[in-house]
Length: 128
Image (cartoon, rainbow, N blue to C red; front, side):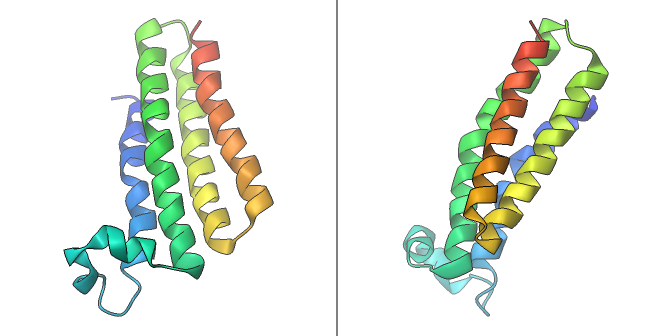
């Protein structure tokens, strides 16, 4: 399995880092809120709400990344090293995005989001 494919697996689980930050830091590890988690998550504020928002964004962007990696492999025109490098950079951008969201660094978060989306586009471009 390629490094890029391992990055797909990591990307699939990264949203749950945000979920854990939002839900499982309330003293009871979110178990009481698990009866109606959507209402609970909608009621959050501060950094926990931002963690939930980061979770939602991660779920939104992951399918595009997965598609890019699979299409990049199927096209077979890009070098594996290039695909791996772009995939690792994307994962790094998502971790940085999460940190920016929690820290409420809105402007930097937007730049990092754009960088991550550019990395997805780059996978397609190098696969032409």
